Length: 384
Image (tube, rainbow, N blue to C red; front, side, top):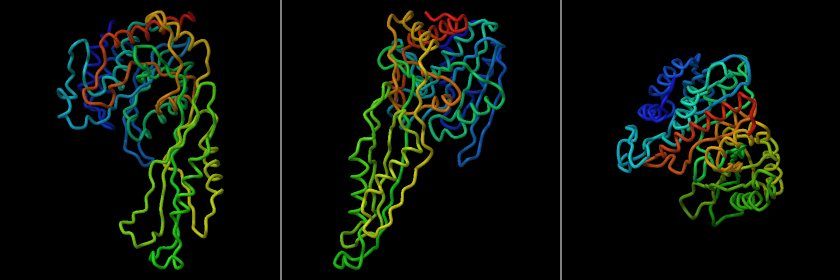
């Protein structure tokens, strides 16, 4: 049964699935996947301080190699619609491009791999799909819990592809074989409030806070690894909340974020931060450090036959092998990497999250072809 990725993408865009509202996107996918022989399970996760989220797991085939495609149907809000040429949830095709919120990030990836699956015989091998509606916001009740549920229920995989936009300038010029981790923290320095004319009766926390900021930002974490750039700490804010000039404040805080490579874990970074803070003379103040939110772990998928097969597939279709990248922010691939090798392979993404988000129709059909040809090689055990 043939499935047109352009038609599927237009229908997905028409579902205003701003996190966490699936707005019919998962219903649409369930119908299409059932029609091409997938068994579909709908899963709703909630709790852990976040909103409830609808997720979808689908599987087809038995035995053979197991391939997982993953992605998200949720999108960021469109913002001020006055900046859009037309309604962001009314798909518009013009000049060979398809416009709409989620066109690039990442309903196109989902449309492409679902359409590609329709072209693969069910007996080829086992295909699994893990689709969440919670990637763009908290990411608590989405992919992390979905892949944990898969593992608990025996749905293992040999290789996974996340359909996030991974190409830099042209389709297939880059695939992501890993991602840096993200670690955020807050440091609070507390002294004694007082009048600036009587500093001996107060204890100003700001010089200590400034020293902490210098200690954290003046020492390099590392020089990089074979596949990652150097880890980097950025101070993002320093706050006192003092609107006047004649009061020594009681406390001040600073926040920072570290984008880090595979030399580090959240635990080792926390130890590094504590050591840097410990190098600062407290001068009678209290210095408190806490990790903000849940850190994202760095990961690097092992290079091997499956990545070589994907690279050879892309080269055969586009005429050029992709670069292996670990750049950018974080993605749900970080959760999948805990259970097996994963790469990100998708469209060009410069318009994602912007007004008039769009993709080239030729890229969508090209990505569908890449996915389908890769599956033929993957299930046949062909590396080139």
